[in-house]
Image 1: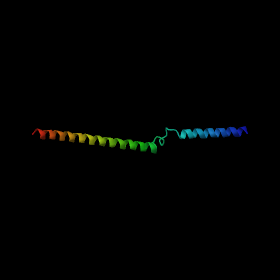
Image 2: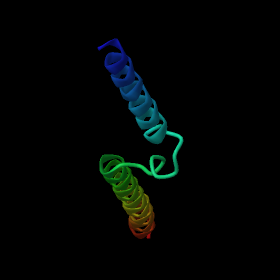
Image 3: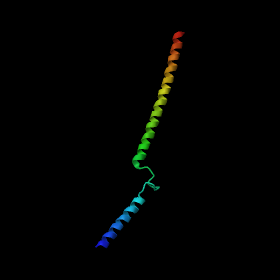
Image 4: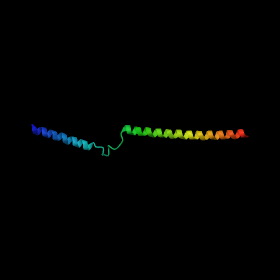
Length: 78
């Protein structure tokens, strides 16, 4: 009975060790980001692009407003 128990414990230990080594984070397939990480990265990119576009629109609006004010001032001086 003791021999069967020792063999069983050894088999479980070997399977556990192989499982830990096989599923370690150093393997090539484990380095790829998961679906959630990829979706989060895409959302971050989209948010950055939206913020950049909003900044460009704000800058162009400010430039146009400044030019309109300058032209209005010139017209009023005439």
